[in-house]
Length: 94
Image (cartoon, rainbow, N blue to C red; front, side, top):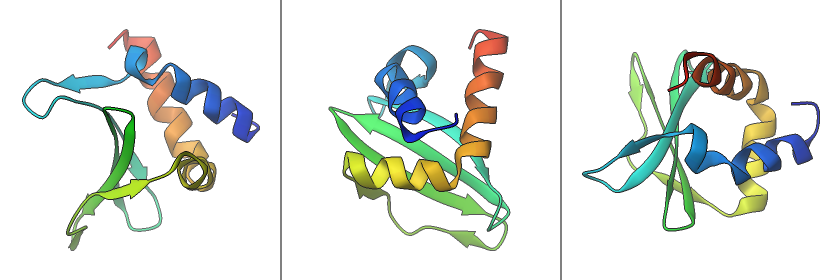
């Protein structure tokens, strides 16, 4: 992912590559939070994007809901970890 357009293209296929939680009715993808040494979960439910972070010593109190522009900026900052997670899913076929 070399540009924000690459991230936007990946998001357009999110439901095809992400896991699905039937109970919560959300698509989700987990990737590393290298700054806080934990993980982020990116979620999509009914066209609404959200993120949640947790790790040793921290857990975000709530999901943070993001507009598409904010989401692109967030994923741009975390593009290496996001890309690695997507590639791993594609390789395993999950």
